Length: 365
Image (cartoon, rainbow, N blue to C red; front, side):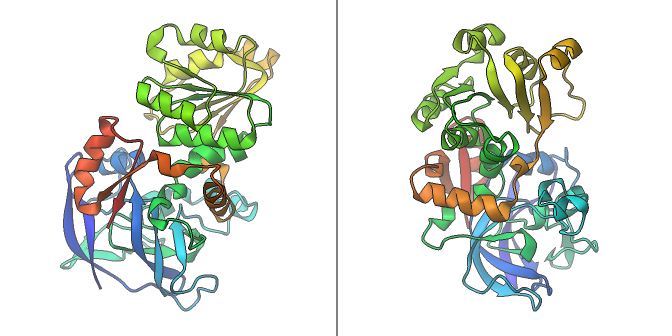
């Protein structure tokens, strides 16, 4: 069938709105009519070829929509289901069998290969191959093909057009605090970076009952929003020495540190404020050559842990419905972070997000 999609044809170039052909779902796949798709930094670095997905390609990995067709082997989904699309995993490796799909042994080829596992793509343009299956979905389009495994059913009473970012950005921020770090009630946490991931982490810290929630963020509007969402303190890293600024707020140090900036100097400064037996979680897609320096004596004597985190250590099938329930209960106000554009306005949405005019852009096909 014919669909409309935002297509990336050159690294760093604008997306173009085009009519493509999409295949029918295979036996283990579903076709989803996309209602909303979050715009994530990962989509842009893939377009720019920091992640070398073959171009032309359709990106988008925070889709939400309605199931319109199912393959013959799909059992747990049916036409009409409201769903959020998340990352893809194989379901067979040791990590998947231990309910750790974000560390699937096949994570990179399944999510960044631009194709199914057999090398095929469901997308084409007048006979020209177009890379699809980005994070198992490619949801910058009116329709997407996804594997049943990375499709999560959600409550149809929830506002479906706003839920797509739960598939990656919001899941990563909230999951990192609620799952990977498993922050204790009454504890302290410093969150570096106040974009969609960082503000979702603030909301996750509120859910966990953290007593002190400190956001490090240069944009005043985002610091103000963080306070409205439940942060107890904010720090402007441009106001002086970051380590000194954090020690002024938390003289005993912080139990947890969560970085989503990927800036080595920020991480190193914040690490000096980690309390004994504290944990630092890092999620940012940093430049490949990025590195940080650790003082081994301090690391050992203080019992510090530094932990890389993918997708919040989450199993989407459990965390996404939990976050939807928290949103419906008024405890995870993700709508405060979202601004919507039509799919045709994708380039305007990217520019607005770069200018800091919104936290999370969601495209409405």
